[in-house]
Image 1 (tube, rainbow, N blue to C red):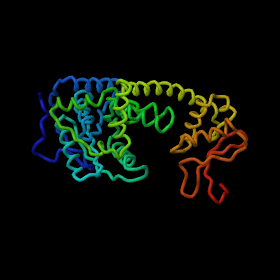
Image 2: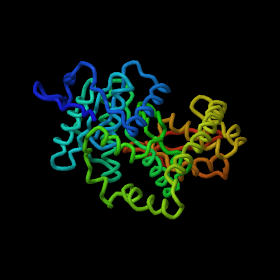
Image 3: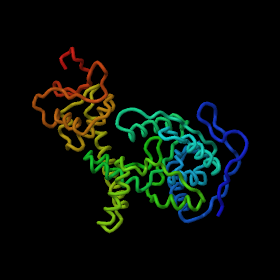
Image 4: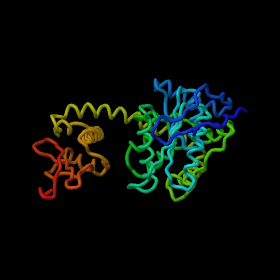
Length: 354
């Protein structure tokens, strides 16, 4: 088995931002051809064929099994690869974990590797704050390239279960896309166990994040308790079935979104929406058109309850007042109102009587 060499000597083999990061140059080392690593390489090959990028790709590398295996496969299949290692600084020694991951990226043959220290704070708890900080850092550092993420079929199954539990509708049940803006997910049809075996074929011991084992996090309990129990009760195949469900819901949703876009355009007059045109459409299409129009108008964080209350201004109109929405200012609320058969969005201050 051929193990990628560890970089030795010379300048630091990674960058923490600022000037262009150090790169090794030269051809990447030859990878072993075990079945797990080949499966991952084929997944990356399919993704790059469907989503070509002339300037190579970036890979979000944590040092865990999923991102390690993805990085190694990307070097072989996706052209110039630039590793981005986010240091959340939530645990003692996290800088050393990040440095080691960057070293391994260069040993695989990445064109460059950067360590991105972030500050984790903000609303929504630790998981949400860390995710927001991570994605912001990756987006800022990707230099226009797509960023490959190590989400697997198991992650997709967990996402679908979370969406079902929250009752947040088909958008959540549809799970993650293989390409969503700058984010690429080549491994959504690959099991997590395959990435573990691939690291074994590479002769590497992946980093085990303690947070990924803590029952304090809902996703961890889904992974370690709920999904194994469902597999036992239903006789296996649950993760694959949940992933297939996500694919089917997403395909249906894409069709509804296209119809809703046509409806939104037909109903839009200037900055307003014609309720008569909207009312003629089925509720599922109408709500999608309304959501799309509100997002264009600057509404953020729209909940299902808000959307349905907003839709009542069309489908259950009885002279009710406006609907307060997300995306307001400190001194004013963003409100959707109906007047003379048209919907409009505007700021309402407390002095104006709200």
